[in-house]
Every structure is written in structure tokens, then in C-alpha cells.
Image (cartoon, rainbow, N blue to C red):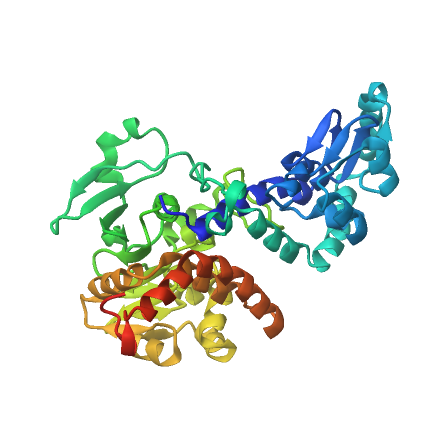
Length: 490
């Protein structure tokens, strides 16, 4: 499989987030170091709130001498620039005594006393009310966040990746493989050719596929049809105008996680079967939560940036709306995309609407707020004024108006949204994908930043893609390809 810098970064970033879940935990974490805490082990140790070492234990980041960068960047924030450079420019290790003297760790004690010292410290903190522990930890950690910790980690994670095209001689690394499991294990699949000869995949909630085969045809509301590098993800609850129930939401998440992880997939199209994109959250299901609110609590948005063990946030009410994919998704909108369905369309990168299709915050009538990205994404797409009027009135927004105000990018004839969306997807899939994904990610990550900071991020985000694809592409142009804007042969 060719090296993909975006896949590489996503994998490395996932590991960084796993390490940093210790830092973001609401409860204090004490790290006990005996023997060695080196390389990634030092990353993990330094993410703890307090570190106690045996005096003869060793800590350091030895890969700095060969290939690697500590992705959590905690060496800098715990030691300061001078001593962080002393450690990372040499790759040396230091013992517990030195680590304590430098302020890298809280304390160093004789090895035989380490267990007792850790337990005594933990017991002392356990006597403080839990809410106080949480508040103090969040307050102190926020100071580090304000000093640019996230930006430093982004650069460190980028530098720690495999970056095969950048490597030379002994530094050549094997391409990363993302071995992380899907959100709930596996996606159950049933393959069959569709009427166009494409592969069709039915998706349901994850679990043991062997137990689901018999129920696939009658219970699956989401299926995938593949054509080359393009996936069409189809939501099929026509009897409910594709309103979103929990099973459909789970299945859509599974489908898009699988799409994002498939190295052969480049672009996805999301389409609602039966003439409706999505009529929103299933309010019949919503009404049942009056008696038992626990299902809603299970998908509550975390109060910080912590993710679950699988590296993902809890799914959104409409399913994939909290996923941060590496690849573009096109919404092919027929009929209503209203309330939560509007939010689902806004999650996509591009929206293609049929002439009779429409958006609207129809949930305004029933006291159901936009809680799945609507108040966040719509103002960023059409501006605050237009978004506010659409949100507050809840009125219908026909396709022609949506195109005029920038809420969609194309309007096509009725019954043509899927066809047009798939054609656009195939066109995007023709291009060098590392570059496509780098530019897409830069569009999102620059929001809210100053021009200077946004351009800095754009540079470091784009350079790996240029190395992987851009230089070779420039060579093809120099050899005569693509002159005068010709896209036919690239």
C-alpha cells in the first residue's frame, strides 16, 4: 500500500490522544516509575499529574537520537526550553534523583520505599472532595492549554510520524498501519451486486457477524455501494422519511468509520433512499425518553476533549455528526433535510440538492433544539445573520435559496442528486489524495485562528503532501501534462 501522510498523521494522532487521556482524566493520576520510562513510556509517564520515581530508575527519550519526537510535548512544559533541549538533543536518560532536582518529577525515593510513598500521596489526595480535585486539575491544565500545548503537540505528532518519503538511509520507516479497532468491534457485512454491477454492502450494528446474517435483509437500514474509490452510503427508512433512529445512527457511524479506514476509499456520497434525505431525529423515539433518559445520557458530549477507548467521541444523535474524517463526504439531498437531517447535511463537506429538496429547522415547532452541530456549522457556512434568521424562524429553505446563500453548492433536477454526487465524487477521487485531504483539513483547522497562525498550520499541514505527491505532479506538468487547464489527462 503506498504511503499516505494523512493516514500516517491520523494514526500517530490517535496514539497521542491515547497517551493524553491520562492528562484529560477528571481524576488525578499518580505515576510510579521503577526501572525505565523511556521513549513512548516517558510520554505516558509525563502525562500523569504527579510522577514519583525510584532514585535508580531512568527516564528519557532515546529515539531522539535516531528517529522520533515525543508527541505529547510534555518534556518542554515540565522542564522548560533549556533542559528539554538538553534531553532531546542528546537522547540521554537521567536517574530519579536528577529528574527530581530538575523538576521533571515530583519526588524520587529509594526503590524499596517507592510503593509506600505513592500510596501515601494517593491517600492524601483521596481525602479531598472529588469536585475539588476535578476543579483544581482542570484549572491547572487549562494554563498549559493556553500556552499552546495543542499546537506544539500537532507539530510533534507530525514529526514523529513515519514520513517515508522524507526518510533517508537508516531512517527509512515502514508505513504505519492503523490497527485501531472500529467503534464497537466490527461492521457486519453482506455483499451482493446491485443492478449496476457494483458491490453492495449492508451495514448493521457491530457484533458477531455470524449472528446477524439471517437478519441482514430485513433489519439493516444502512447499506454501502462501492464503485472504484467511491462509496455511496445509503440510509433506507423510507416509511419514516429516513428519520434517524438509534439503530440507523449506529449503522451510519460504522459505515463512515469503515470508509475512513479503507485505504482504497477516497470519497463518500450520503444519500437517503425513497425521496427523502432525512426528516430529522425520530421524534417517536424521542418521546420515549421521557420515561427513560439514559440513552440520551449515553451520547452526551464530553465536557473535555477525552475520547473513548476506540479513539472516538460518543456518536451524535444523527449518527456520524461528531466524526472528524480524513476524506470528503458529499450529501446528495432529495426531499426534506430538516431539523436533525439539516444538521446531518451540514456535517458533509459538499451538498448537492434536487430542485424540490429543502432545508429547515422544523424542530423549532416542538421545542427540540439543535444539538448536533446545526448552530455551529450553519453560521460558518452562510454567516451569522442568515443562520440566525433560518434557525429562529424554523422556516423552509428551498434548494434555490440554499444555493443563493451558500448552504448548498449545486442544484440538479429531481431524481439526479445521487447521480451528480457520485460523478463529483469520482472526479475528486481522480486527484492525488494526500493533497486533497491536506487541503480539506486545512480549511477546517484554520477556523477561529489569526491569519498568521492559520497560515502556519496550513504550511505544516501541506508540506508532507507536497513531498509525497506535489513534486512529482510538478514534474508531470513540466513534461507537458495538463497544460491550459486540461483536467483530462493528469
